[in-house]
Image (cartoon, rainbow, N blue to C red; front, side):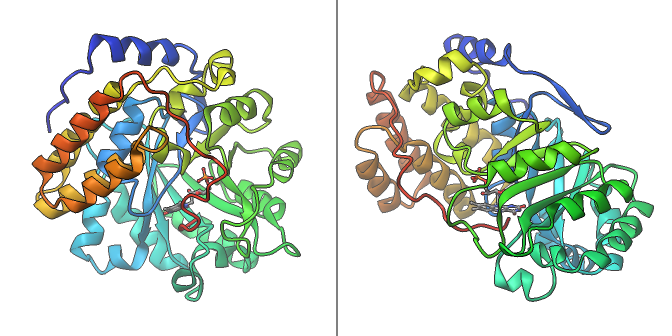
Length: 364
Ligand SMILES: Cc1cc2nc3c(=O)[nH]c(=O)nc-3n(C[C@H](O)[C@H](O)[C@H](O)COP(=O)(O)O)c2cc1C
């Protein structure tokens, strides 16, 4: 595992400028470098992306959801997902499952891979997970929660956190009750996506609901949902009662969102100082991390290409660029196309259309 090539002095200076605005925080026993944390995303929050986002200001990261049964069956691909890079600082592994014994056995195995914390997925709305009693279905059977948390904690040394939704549906928004159970069972913090399971990704995250939870809570709370623009994130950061905020989709189209959201004056200008060439540097670093993590050429290509295409969102001719990327099946060609594209837009501003629906499904 080698450290990556440094960013250019220009990009480093920009990154450091924003970093100076970050407020380190402690949630339970864990220190985070900033209040803005990368939310778990299936198929995305693997080692390369987590490392990249930490380099670009995320105060901590969480893996994608990983099946407790896959871990217990010692499924090779599942165990690979538990791996952590030595350069990762504040990383947690997220587990999903429905059974206390299976979850605690999986947590014990997970701990041997060295995460700073383990998180339970209690927000996944996907039928395949929910129909077996995992993900957001855990929020329906509140009587099972304390026994599950306590059984898991008995086998664990690192902190245990949970990520929930506001409730199952609009009639059963029981996050407050779950917070109480979590606190009494020694959960370290709770992250909450401000939608119900039934909403999936429709409507808006209910920040009023999240902020009101804050009043009665006695354990750290991380708010999440629809923080897609540095401006919205910065505004929320200034007025929130939450201890920290999590960003998921916003970091896909804007890899600099963790940094840009830190300076309120800058974020309110709604203009970005990060250029096409800056994005090209980020892509090169992503490549380094991806090649260190995966061996299979096809996997490397697929992992890099999907992010490169998202990163181009909002720049001129991004649709054409996307078409060119997907017309090529060779990593070198794709990188050359990315280089030519990002270097050619050095004077262009990024204008993302936030009214456009972007990624309206996911596992939490
Ligand atoms: C593609 C995708 C995959 C996701 N996977 C997970 C996951 O594995 N675990 C989880 O708790 N949440 C998952 N989520 C939910 C996000 O962590 C987050 O709660 C949700 O997207 C709302 O935040 P956002 O508006 O910042 O995107 C996923 C979301 C997306 C879009």
